Length: 375
Image (cartoon, rainbow, N blue to C red):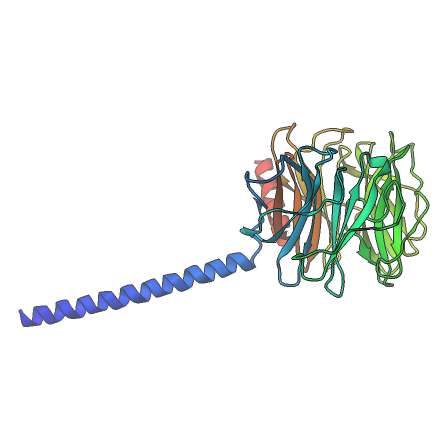
């Protein structure tokens, strides 16, 4: 009995120690898994906020990635686009942990539109947005934050007295290799016209370019708006634009965006819906867009595609939001860092969706989808 008790006691002690060690290991594994999940890019979609919100509809999101890995995401929200109660809302955080939406810009009882966030080299965050009853006569307003979006300055007009829109119209501006800031802009007073706005003094003053010419034999309808820009080499600047021709348009500049070739069509279909592009650290261009080829066509699905030759050819296409033809996954905004991207977009005017992944994620998933489609 004594031997049996000793064995039982030893066995019990061993089991208890083993249990403690297993619990400890499991706890460490869970902690490590959680850390890996937080640090990795899951290539999955989530919503920045849920059903509990202070606005019925939302649209036209924008985002920046902060130095600590968090994101600021802004959009316009209210009863419906164009209504006088629409303001600019913002959330901060990272996947799985977003702050509640907060209205950060509402300067008067006119509709607010198309926020664009930018982070400067010295850490300041700039928020550009439009205000006005009608798009052709809206104004561009600006707010700034020096504490990563916790507090914001008073709003001021980008170009005082301007009607029609200056500065970035939808997509982020870029800082060129010569230090100039270049913003993709457009005007909708008569035809849809594209131009660029340039600042040589870090956003204090701006000079608009002439309207770009458009090849109307290739691109039919009202024209083009909402350029997204990138610089491939010093002085070589490129844009893709939304058009009314059922296709994405493109123009190129060889002199830091001072003069531009006529806008011509690309091979990329688009239903006259917003697009955005970002250049990865290795020069790959990632484009977010809707691939329907009918003017005012379907905004489902929303796709990501990659180009390895400066936008001449596009491969490794991946749908990041799919649904019925009358669903709306639209107005993407995209930012990049290293080999990774993050995308926000409108989800049926009800929510703002967030997707993040690496270049490898996109390539691997696109290849899997091709294999499935071929089976």
